[in-house]
Amino acid sequence: MWTIAMKEILILTLFISGIRADASLNDLDMPSSNGRVPSFVTPGQTYRIATGSTVVLPCRITEPGSYVLAWKRGIAVLTAGPVKVTPDPRVSLLPASPGTSSLPGIPGFAGGSYSLELKNVRPHDAGDYVCQIGTLEPREITHTLEILVPPRIHYVSHNGPLDVLQGATVKMECRASGNPVPTVAWTRKNNVLPSGERSVSGLSLVIQHADRHSAGQYQCSADNGVGQPDTKHITLNVLYAPEVETERGTVHTGIGLEAQLVCIVHAEPAPQVLWFKDTAQLGTTEQHASHSRGNRYTLVIRNVTAADFGNYSCVGSNVHGKARGHVVLTGVPGLAVFDSSTLSTEKDIYNISWSVNSHAAVTEFRLFYRQQRTPHHRSHHFESNNTMNMGHRSEWNSVVIPGSGVTNPSMQAPPPFPGVTKQKMWYVIKGLQAASTYEARVQAKNSHGWNKMSPIFHFNTRANEMENMVEPSAQPAVYGSSQTGLFPFSSSANLIAPSYYTFTIIAIAAAAVY
Ligand SMILES: *[C@@H]1O[C@H](CO)[C@@H](O)[C@H](O)[C@H]1NC(C)=O
Ligand SMILES: *[C@@H]1O[C@H](CO)[C@@H](O)[C@H](O)[C@H]1NC(C)=O
Ligand SMILES: *[C@@H]1O[C@H](CO)[C@@H](O)[C@H](O)[C@H]1NC(C)=O
Ligand SMILES: *[C@@H]1O[C@H](CO)[C@@H](O)[C@H](O)[C@H]1NC(C)=O
Image (cartoon, rainbow, N blue to C red; front, side, top):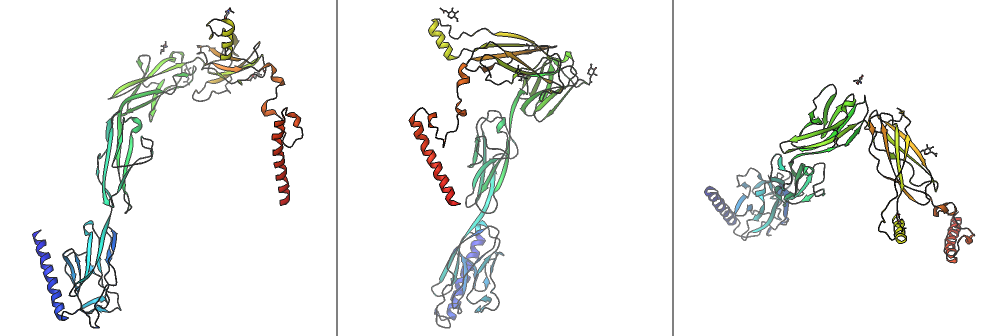
């Protein structure tokens, strides 16, 4: 510090004595050889320059005469006349372009041009630069240099992966410097932020109740419009005990088929997943194989025998805990799915149809149906019958329908039941009430037993007067028609008329164009 201060004093002294020397040469008079005092051609300006680049601070004067020019920064003299005073190698006086006249005593500088070049500018170069003419009362211009600094993230709260327990509150932070002050924005790789937003600004990002959905790679990015934004990544790992779901709770198969039992296991760190049949752990054998892909864990049973039917479970465990999923492997048919229209074509009969997936041939179906009491029926019932028994439903009617006893291998069930076929059946229910809602269920049996009762299916019978009614969508088109008699109210007829006229006018207009 001391040496620098000494140097500045030395330079200052040098400069002042320089002016004195020149002034004495010029008899302390301002005017130059042709009698005029030099003035500046270039005004003082502010320059905004990115770090690392080169700036030229211009200083041109009229009638240089024999005055000495100097560049100063604060009290430090950078150049005096042709002499570069500062030891900074990045500073130089710009040579004049050839063919221009030179300042007296300053060879190589164009007539009146005394520009300062500063290479590889740095943030601490910011400040005022003064170009001064050594007249008796010094004249000067001041350039202000602002150094634009590209953004740089100088602090990241977490270097490397950030591991938190499920439910924790996570705070990530990035601090950045630059000129102008950069803004920091947070995004997430290939995903939106847990808040659902694409990006949020701020020095920190807070995630409440971290769960497996909040895990991933986060990115903070600082930008101030200078150069490229700076970015840093934080990988968030949320640690939690396994969560197990089964793809299907029941897998329908058949003897000799290959069956696949699937558990979806989420866990961090990655779980160990074991398969059990009842309480016995299953190893890899000719009959059983297990594999995983991502978080999908599959048990393959290669050649299903009757002994393979039963209850299976997958158990996922890691240091944070364990969880179990249950899958039943069965040979009985799958649940029946109804495919008939919900509105009967007749008022008293209904053709109900359904299908089941089964490998073994279905030998028997049981169809159950009954009339459903609508709210209207109930209140009517209540009024006429003074009991509180308003929710009472009629008994189920049941019909036993023999299955075809054969499977048609061309009717493959949709995936994921390889080898299982779709078996269709229908039945015409007679003696129904018109304009009523019915509910139906079906159960199917094969050599392995009865399946579960299907969910309830609703259908409606047509109303008695249906044949005589004109459906709204089936009304004849009347626009432009003179048959207003179709409308019982004159107001309807009046409503039609304007449409008709509009139509006519358009038609005439169209004709006029041609
Ligand atoms: C499946 O097992 C049965 C009896 O155990 C055997 O007869 C049949 O060849 C096996 N099928 C396959 C594809 O391995
Ligand atoms: C499978 O488990 C269920 C309960 O989840 C039980 O009712 C059933 O009897 C079990 N079946 C076998 C074959 O163990
Ligand atoms: C009942 O519907 C099925 C198709 O769903 C059809 O194949 C069958 O012929 C119909 N039965 C009658 C009697 O209309
Ligand atoms: C009321 O309704 C119930 C059920 O429909 C019926 O059993 C009973 O006989 C009715 N009572 C009268 C008084 O109509």
